[in-house]
Length: 164
Image: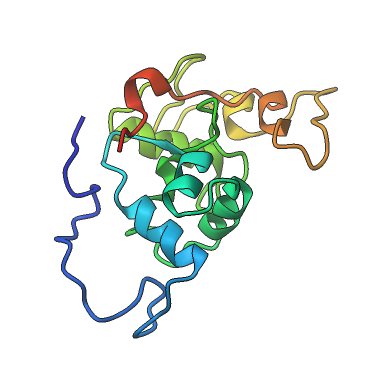
């Protein structure tokens, strides 16, 4: 695992422009979330709860998801490295869906606990990875557990969770 600069190619020096692209942007919750997520090394993942705690609001894991869904710089702020507490991928990954999140993590060397890996180029993707529900698969509405009902693959957190 690379525990370097977060894999974003940034050298840590500020540009005078805030994460949201506005000069002098404040230190709101979303800004703190983006700063923490930028520190996750390539080849590692963190959980929504872990990000909430590191951003100073340990009970705000859902708010972390909201902030990441509105990530202003997806190529710089690696939101694909954030997963559920059990290692499951986000079914609502805003930048290409769970298949894309899987591909990005797999390209960084992150291993998964169950199921076949989808091809990164072409080929059929298992329905459970593409986020397509099987007939009769109805997750509970409004439940964070709904991702489990969709059979999302899980990252091996014992090997790939970022330890701060």
